[in-house]
Amino acid sequence: MIKTFKGISELSQYAASSFIEIAKKSIKERGRFLAALSGGSTPLRLYELLGDQFQNEVDWHHVHFFWGDERCVPVEDPGNSYGQTKKVLFDKIAIPEENIHRIPSQLDPGTAAREYACILKAFSEPPLAWPRFDLVLLGMGDDGHTASLFPHYQVETDLPTLAVTANYQDRPANRVTLTPKVLNSSRNIIFLVAGKAKAATLSRVLGSKHMPEELPAQRIAPVNGSLTWLIDEEAGSLL
Ligand code: 6PG
Image (cartoon, rainbow, N blue to C red; front, side, top):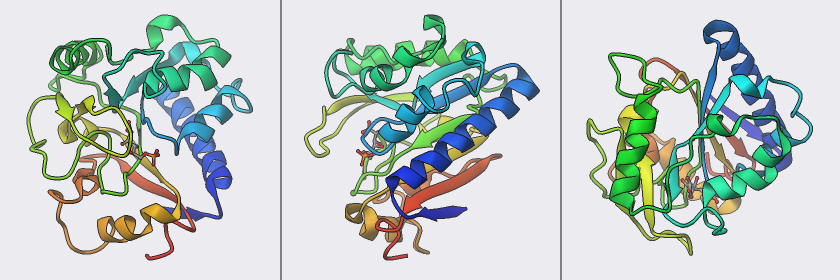
């Protein structure tokens, strides 16, 4: 499903309401809400809303945060996705420290990927060796990547996590990412895509030609879950 909004603030407001709705349903049905967050700039307004206007809408003690990917830099580095989110969200809400499962970005990518796979296993839903996330938030780069699944990278694997080195804009290159296997086990996946710079790529990703090697965002197809694209008018201008 694709929903188009005038701009990032309307998109973020809707995304925050969806986040809370899925959280309440997950907690009601399973006693917990497992959410994997995205880095980048697009979701920041959403995270601010969750830490401010929506902070009393859910019992954060039942919420567990993970990441779809992380840049392997120290948490205080402005490029660290966990550190960015902590400032606008975790520092504003009553969530137990142990409910925040950051990727150990201070380690080398290979070790961080293995350690994160162990963290995921503790929340696994057998026969899977990882959790079925209740919600995964994803962004899309103007090169068609999502999480840290970059074009022309071999990412179709049975492993839950991968160490990746990729250059994208001025962002840290060494990363850890969830693999399509894990992402596509999720109950709900929401892409947030905004801005004119994404329009051409978005029209290719959502277009008829399936070419996941070039456009890794096309690898995202939940096996038994919902897939929603929240886009603004600029990003959707070529659809
Ligand atoms: C990251 C993200 C990455 C991001 C896209 C879009 O760590 O950078 O996980 O996949 O979502 O690069 O980033 P923007 O939202 O900043 O355009």
